[in-house]
Amino acid sequence: MSSPTRHRRSTSRSCALGAAVVAALALAGCAEDGSVSVPEFTLTGDQVQQFLDDARSQAETIGHDVRSLADDLGSLSGETRTRAEDAVAAAQEAADEARAAADEVSTATEDTRAEAEQRLADAETALEDASTELDAVADSLSGADAAVRDAIESLRTRVDELRADLDGSTGS
Image (tube, rainbow, N blue to C red; front, top):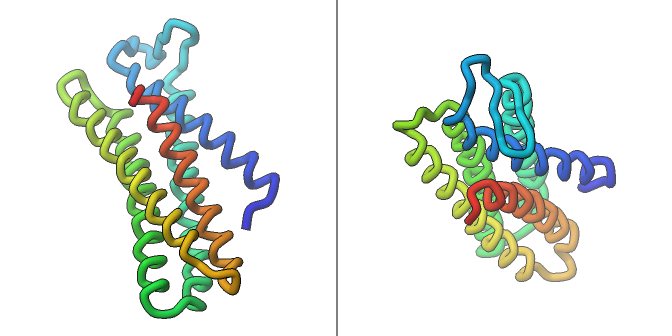
């Protein structure tokens, strides 16, 4: 489910997402030419857009992992399957919320900044909750469900990376 190349891409996307959110939060001080001045570096409007595109891509990767996991969940039975499906759905919803929050922050004005930042914080909380659910499900799976457990743990890792980026960007 996770190759070294894919992990490096995920790490790169995580870094890009963190930078995108930081850059988006700094847009209140944007110059008319679209550049953003941050004490240690300056991002152009195109660079901010690239970071946001990377954030969307990371959320889409989580979505792809969720779709790949759907077939594996069919091997589970009863309560375990229901809990796993709920946890995976929570991960997808949290990733979607994080993507939407990053978009909102990127277009926030001075008047809407607080609301956008709150949405970003809410997305971070949703990612944390999804990670907790995924962890509980993975811990409850028996050795016979090792492939499903590994896939759920991989998804949880991606969710944790996205959450850490949001946490780092909001200073929570």
